[in-house]
Image (cartoon, rainbow, N blue to C red; front, top):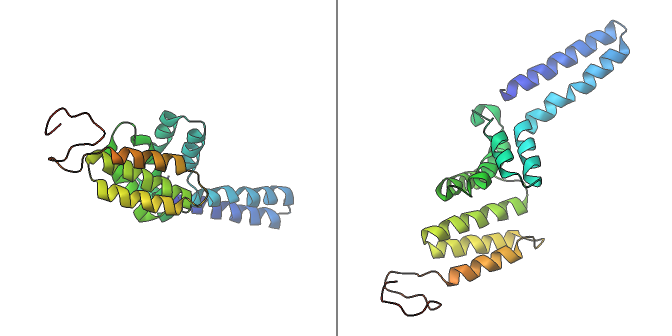
Length: 188
């Protein structure tokens, strides 16, 4: 549903509620005016994104992906801040199957903006993992450093340390051997 249709529905509910007051139907008028808060709330918080976050809390990534796929035209259905969280959730749900697509979504999420520091830290950590998988070690180090600065509550310290340990094992160039591997040959 288009985001502006929700505001039109809320305005109509308020208008009918005011009409009910003039017709001395105070109970129904009050109920309609109170219920008009629901479309206004859903203008700022998309219902599919809320349901996807609820599925993520239950560790159901497939359920979250199902709810996110119901948003067919994100540009017309979501406001700017919701676009950031739409891309963030799509990046999380795609991270298991397609790292390149997840990286694209996380970059867009950071571009649109995320409200909370821990969400930005998670997005940067996901980006660092995707970049590390492509072999761009320096960019991954920068992203992990930024994620560490954003993680003020210490929620991701273990994951950041684990990723830094994995980065130590990555070969930097073609002619450089990994010091943690046994000597098997010049290029592998």
